[in-house]
Length: 218
Ligand SMILES: Cc1ncc(COP(=O)(O)O)c(C=O)c1O
Image (cartoon, rainbow, N blue to C red):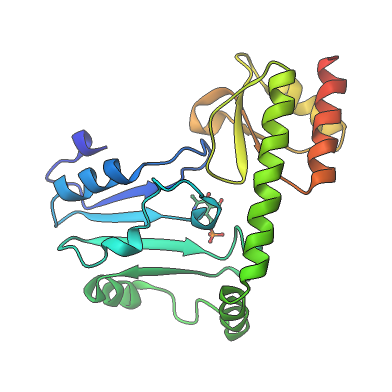
């Protein structure tokens, strides 16, 4: 991404961890990028899956806000907090950037109810911990079972897992649909042999594995 920056570049978006790969940019890589990118390029770091990451090498970019750089960190209540229906997230950046966003944003773009719910959610550490625990265990189970089925996956730092079937995944996708299991084809991202599987509750993960065994005949 750094090598693609030109004098015309205004904004760079980095999703960390990234969707749909589940991969992460490590602290050293992020710091190198931020140190080398010009201050006139706004770097937006989308940390939608921030709360799921347990790797000590994950960079919390809220800590970089005081560098002499244009950094905007954005997070959401849609993921670990389970409040996607409320349509609320937050961002932190230089007051000048926030002020420019205030001038461009829609008026009344969130509701007071969503804001109250989000403030309460921020204090619900027990929920976040439980979600992280359920996700960690779900990932472990899915990785194990996918391994047994001989299916490759990309190491993930999120609540989903990218699997590579090495061939057109649509027949499997459609067969899973008929079993009542919805996964995500990623042709739109140029990942033509992959599917993304989101971690669910234990019984949902087990249902996915049962369906996989049935439709692959393994
Ligand atoms: C990287 C990333 N950012 C943002 C979002 C969406 O967040 P929100 O529901 O707050 O629009 C998603 C959800 O799919 C995502 O994967």
